[in-house]
Length: 251
Image (cartoon, rainbow, N blue to C red; front, top):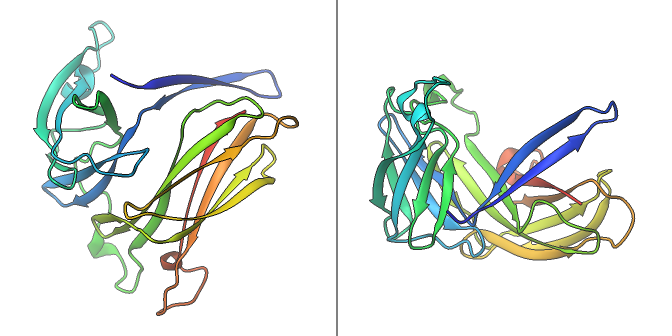
């Protein structure tokens, strides 16, 4: 499967260390709809923002996760657990059941030799709409950010992409033709560079930043913000009028 795997090690002032693995692949998914019986996902190319329409896929999962049996003595091998084809919008459905968890399932698209990982099990509804106040805003907007790598050297270019999306109840859509502010910040949170971009028809923006050739190294970040012109409510603090996202990487 086509992916890049990075291991990042953090060294704390007291000498202790912590490491984490980061998997970088070039397709991703957003949840489009969810009810008691099913959940639907849309598969997108993280470089172009276009959906993977009419694409065959195969689902894999570790046998321990699939069978909900965790025994250190047996081999936790990868097994095929399903297959299907996305529709004209790049959407596919998975049935929901108390006995079936999808956490860490791998969706592999043979035509593109790429994959994505489902990071939730979706065995039940997480939020009960009946318990929400009737006047509570249920629209959630956020920005998903990608970079071409997880680690850079000073003076290198960072190629980035952002996808602006909105969730309303159990449905999700991408937002096109929206202004987005993109900020590169150094390890102290200080702004290094800034760009003003507009999302395309697929709700995405992409560009690059040039990292400083010298100075601070460590954990940098890319922050994206979008402010919406909501004629019904001009309160800048309202979630309807604002979306944001950030991504950290090492220099």
